[in-house]
Image (tube, rainbow, N blue to C red; front, side, top):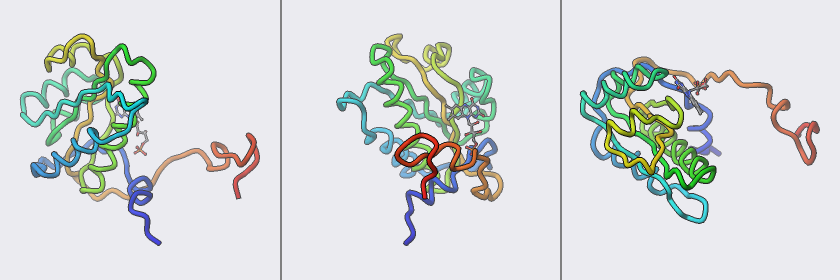
Length: 171
Ligand SMILES: Cc1cc2nc3c(=O)[nH]c(=O)nc-3n(C[C@H](O)[C@H](O)[C@H](O)COP(=O)(O)O)c2cc1C
């Protein structure tokens, strides 16, 4: 039986080339809602998501995040921030929201990727986030330039999954 969630996990890839086509408003909204709806420790939701669609903002993100210059050519981007005082929990919560965003986007045919890592103070300041937040990631969004196949490079399954105790293969 087809499992659409597993299919998204199986096929999603980091997308770094975008075709320049705009993403419809309702799709952007759904992607943002997937972040909003994500679970967090004690339901504290210690995060904020800034959706950037204006060219100038996208260009700025591309120049501020050294490992994600291609955000300049994305159709949109989400800045993911979490409250500093939420510590390790906030980091986990925001990471989970990032996975929601990436998978929801992928299910809509929109590619994305995680770029950068906390703290990104220049991004925080440029986009007006208070200094009680750390920016964890910038996620460029856009339609991939070419058809991508879900070919993953991963360690062998048995190297990273055990049954009952470390080192016993799952059958
Ligand atoms: C926590 C995290 C940080 C990442 N940071 C970057 C980054 O700064 N720039 C980038 O181009 N890709 C980044 N990536 C993407 C990974 O390099 C990519 O997902 C990984 O190589 C596996 O490739 P795949 O997603 O296509 O299977 C990051 C991924 C994660 C999970």
